Image (cartoon, rainbow, N blue to C red; front, side):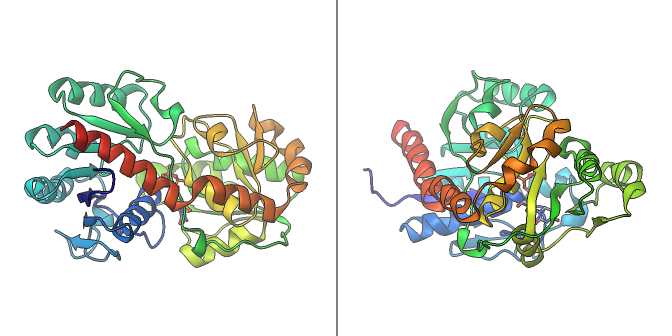
Length: 347
Ligand code: UDP
C-alpha cells in the first residue's frame, strides 16, 4: 500500500502558468509537486493553463493563462470543472486553485484534498467553515501551523510547508550593498515600511514586485512612488533570472509584513541565494526563518534598521545549507504523499 502508484489530479490556480514566468508562489509549488510526484513514479495529471511546463500530463482549458482576467469566476469555474468532471479517473484530487473548486469537491466521490494557500481570518475562514459543513468528506492541508490558528477545527490532514527548486536559485558568497524588497505591492507586504527602513539607514533599496491590480496601483501611487529617489528604485515585476540576481547581490531582504502571512516563499528564495531575511514576527515568519541562523526576526519593523548588523554576521553558505535542509522539494513531496495516503486509505 505504502508504495502503490497513485493516480493524482493536481488542480493549479488558473491565472498564471505553472511554473510562473513572473509573480506566482502557488504556481512554483504546484510545479515542483507535479514533477516530484511524477519522478517518484506516480501518474499525475496537472490541470493548468496550456503555457505551463511539466513532467506530468497537462490538461488545459485555456491555451494561455488568463492573467489579465484574474478574479473572473467564470474562468475559475470552467477550469475547476474540467478537473472535477474527470475525478473518477483518479485516486485523489489535490486542489490548489482556491475555495471555488473546494466548494464543488463534495459533488464528486473521489477524495479531494485541498491545500489552503491563503489566510483564514475573517471571510475566507467563514467560507471554509461553511464548505466543510456541507461536505463532511472535505480534507485540508496547511502550509504552516500558524495558518490554522483562526480555524483550528477545520479537517486538517497535514501541514506541508512549501519547498523550492534550489537548482535555479544559486547561492553567491559575496553580498552587495543594497536592501531588497520583493513581493506584491500591497500594504500587507509592507513595501512602504521597507522604504522607511532604507531611508533611516541611508542605504539603497531595490523594489521588485507585482503591481497590476487596482488596489496595488493605488498603494503604489500613494505610498511608494513619492519616495522613488535617492537610491529608492522600483524595478517592476521581475522575471526569474533578474529576481535571482537581485537576491544574490542584496545585503539583506526586508520582509516587513503586516498580516498573517500563510507561508512567504520570498523568504526561502532569499535564503537559497545566501541572503539573510530581516522580517517582522507575523504569520509564518517564525516557522520559516530561524532567528540568528537564516535571518533576523523583529517585533516591530522600526527595529529592522538596528537588526542589520546581526543580519550581516550571517554567513551566506550557512544560510543556504539550512534552507536546503528544511525546504527541499523531496521533503514536500514526501509530506504530500503521506497526506494523500491517509485520505486514500481512509476512503
Ligand atoms: N515574485 C516574482 N517577481 C516579482 C514579485 C514576486 O517572481 O516581481 C514571486 C516571488 O519571488 C515569490 C512569489 O512571486 O516566488 C510570491 O510568493 P509569496 O509566497 O512570497 O507571496 P504571496 O504573494 O503569494 O503572498
